[in-house]
Image (cartoon, rainbow, N blue to C red):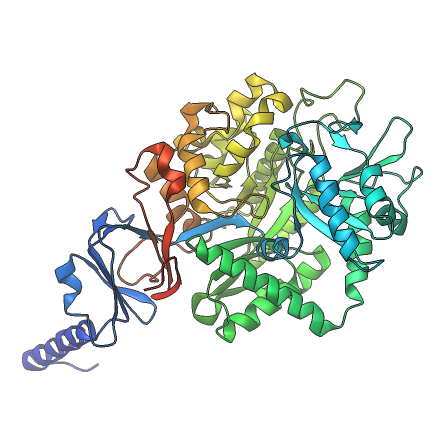
Length: 577
């Protein structure tokens, strides 16, 4: 052991102080000043200026605090009083699907089935015979009129088949839990009157037993298997180019909406390979946190190899697995404790669908806990949520030595009151989507009845008061990836007709901001590096045109993203300087 004299110690500590001063004196890469910086740090909740160097925050405080860090090459942005917040984190979305939605028919704006048929007719006239026509985003409960004829509000395929007789058509429901096929697509898939419903799925049929074209939950695979085979015949280079284009389009969309990190709700190994390749080569601007989705045999063989934290300068993390317990409420696939209120007594699957057996998910849970992965399970209906909570509780009890696992339930939309406290008690993250509340609100009461809806639909306050962490996102491309619209839905719960969906469950503006930043970071084990503005954390910042924390509530949707900053680099600016 080296014994230091007083003089040696003094010289050592003076040298340390000199080095610290020199490090602070080095010019910053970026300085933001003259703004309102909401840090989400209790010790200093608001600041005026911020400086970033080498991708991280090196100073935050007053304008005077950062003046010494401005050098000849420092980029200085005068915020002119504008609000700057920790970069928005999309807490649950489908990244490549968002990009893919930009490359197909966008059905979200269609007002009725006739408009969709017209869109397909135009595409069919321009397509080569045999080419698949794909689209996404339709939602029958949001049309201005019910198609005639219909089965449970869904149209029949005849109109679609008439305008596209030689091209197979596959249109994905806005929820992602159903799809609609024309006659040619069903012919190629071998779907007919005698085709049995697959496990965890339903082929919707008319009064004669003929398929209507609607494939619910697991029945989608009948069509998608043929579509995947069609795509598989392309050269590998063409397939990779398509995915790269999807990633590029999705990234551009997210950056333009102020998103600095995207939590991807399920990608296969091949897509993760490309994410890693792009991250290591510096081709990813957006930060990605990814849940793996694949067969159990593939998961068991590859989990250890695919566990990765902060690859490519904190641009890619993979440490979670995605599973599904049920479907969506809009397509009546959410698994309920009691039957849907708007289905007749003789309807099949009156309580929704269990799309993956709990025993199957239990095996995935064992893989997750053995390999240090989070488990993120899709559950929308109250029965599905109870089953997942039961499963998690049993696994946690058997592995009591494992602490702070932060397993998640994705959506957690409709809960039985008895299960609400269990999220906080078990430490299970409620990864929810504020925008789903106002988007689905018009049909929730019809599906569940008022009593069930009030007791357990999108109960953010009840969950938070029980000690649960509520994360936020959009489930894009089910909804627009725009955090501002989702933030507005979270604080207002206001539907298009002006009514407010059970207002006592609204988030405060600060709660909603936390749900989109530090809560999402916590839900991904990343609160140490992002989610708030603090010296040493990543310099991920979103600058807004208006102060969403103080402006009139009805004006919040008009706020714009002026700048999106990732690692101290401005990757999007609404009005280039």
